[in-house]
Image (cartoon, rainbow, N blue to C red; front, side, top):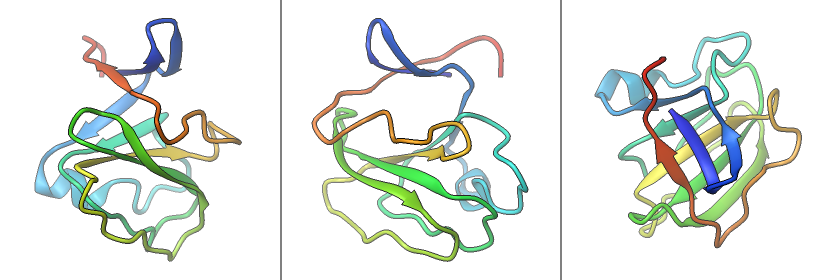
Length: 116
């Protein structure tokens, strides 16, 4: 999956979507290094970073994929608070993005690709 802010501003081209219960539960847990550039967890209203080995940026999205909140550089063993506006969450490893490439108010565009 590809994630963009605008038609010409690509955030990542090797993103993964987690829609199943097990996919959402596992996420990045147990990985020593991030296996992909980002993980879209759908549906999701909050996340934890227990059992993770690296920091992430957490991007909260509403039902129209507008960014409502960003938690930058969230360390392992932390929680984000539940937010009624949040419908899905995009996790971006700090390993790939030193600074979070999105800000509240941005609208994200996701495109499926043939390569997983």
